[in-house]
Length: 561
Image (cartoon, rainbow, N blue to C red; front, side, top):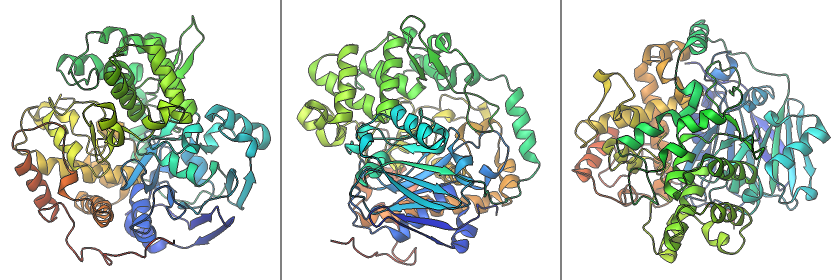
């Protein structure tokens, strides 16, 4: 099986030390990316760790496909214990960071401890350096990137940065790279912020050799030549269709379609798009650099999920208002999905849907934990009672779009996801709209025959996150091609994906997660029996726990006092 190469670089920002250690045995079994990060985190992070404490560890990792020139490979993975969900979680980001990371020669970088001073950590193939940067306290993402470029000659694609939201430990703070690409879901920006790390830079010329099959060029050529709506509108190309079939959350999930969709649709986004945008080595170019000529506002996006959270779910029907929300989140370092849903919850409590000025004020207040923003920074799960609204979250994570009340299989997938209410964990929604060929599609209603497919999709997405391969490659990299690229049988890839999902679940079980956390804020037909079918398919216990003895150790050393 193809796998990333190189040692682990372990950085203690409290002691200002860095050590390398070989992890060849782990690499051979766990490929790279999410699988590698999950295995290291499972074995090295105490099960009882405080997500915002010094003993939590954050892992950055690429995969073997970052050593290719193939489209859909400009991504990398970050893994740690989430301050939002309180469970083990991986997030990945696009952009251009991954190739600069491979240049360091490391297969993974581990960050632990906590610094007394605000620092930037510089990781190169010649070692690790620590730079105190008190002058960057609460600097925005763009200000921090400008500093790094001015002082060190490194452009934003070399950086992983937290904005004020990360420093202030907002539970859904992002880690930003290339200024506008995010390790978005789960609050890993708060983990880095709690360690008093403002940014990490990666640079070097020591990329390890991984031989990738010639098939990579076929995929790349097809991506370049494809006539695909995402090339014009990105993920917003699905917006009007989702609205038509009533799968678009609206006004804090009180409705399933939005009468103002025309003002924020994919067509409106395309009208504001002023150039092509892409990730490293990718010819698909589905990104959305947008500009409003009248105001001069420039941003990247919004993508469909942001369109939902800050658009329909907040009652906003003006694309420029939506662009401003997106820009603020990127520069302050916030996950747009969670931030938008939290804002929508507050709007629901105050009957203020559609108030764009209030929305933009709330985003800033959240990032700086100012006034009401201090409460909202805790996320919906922790504040919904105070606001007097329903708890629209799973495992503490706010919902993305593709509503499960209409797309029932996606609803079940929200519940089973170790990451919480995130649509990309299983990515079942394309099979129910459907966005796939008719012979692969499922009826939107009901859960019959869906649990085994959810298991398969969760497994294959774990492999894509380990390779690391963009999920939007689904029309270009089928099972056979994935086998060729990674030099492994599909059954073996499924087995590894299953191990990754079970490692996440096992870690979370030790933190108290079980069947009671695999829930939804709405009812689905035969949900309980479908959930048990899912557990049976995975070989888990009926209470949603991984059987004792599945992994070498069911206990881990407690966190230091």
